[in-house]
Length: 225
Image 1 (spheres, rainbow, N blue to C red):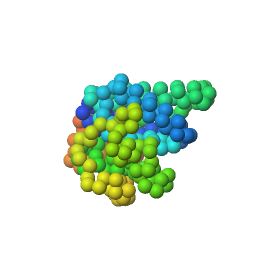
Image 2: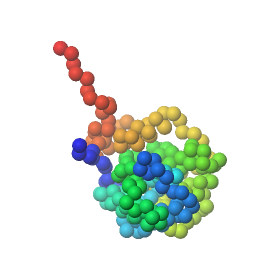
Image 3: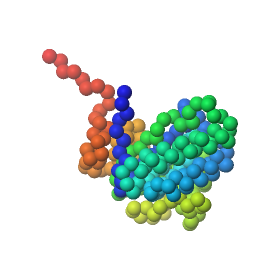
Image 4: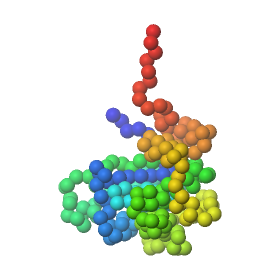
């Protein structure tokens, strides 16, 4: 079965996600997180992609980014996952023991308005939602911690946001998303559907070849004669 089209257009914003194969752990200790961040920093030096939000979780990661040219998000993330996999296997002496990642990354386009802020809250709140910390900004393997330190850490990863954060951003991230927001985001993650207003989503789906993500799941019902 051929792979479905995935949008990767220069100047557009995307949420990207990848998981460990069979949800296996990607990061066992602090050094593993730091090693991935070094790989990501090297990748961002190679490929002109802006990174706005980031969270590394034990068995998956989230990013919100904007490639400067068509195809660059895919090139960056393929390089990052391949390089991370090689270095992981070399460190743990696990070469030949199977895939580290479950598959190619998942992604969906995001509107550069309040929907962008919802996605960034979703990403930066992930460790709190998983009960890994008591406050979202305490998770040091993500953009909220780096931003709350008032300076990006080495390697420098983050780019200025396309729109301003809402006032008291840290407090806002610590507040739960609504069920409506979570349901919509999970649908976007699962199907690659654009996330924005109804009008923007329809237009983005048509322009990016993602119209299939707007259709109901399953086969259409046959009409009875």
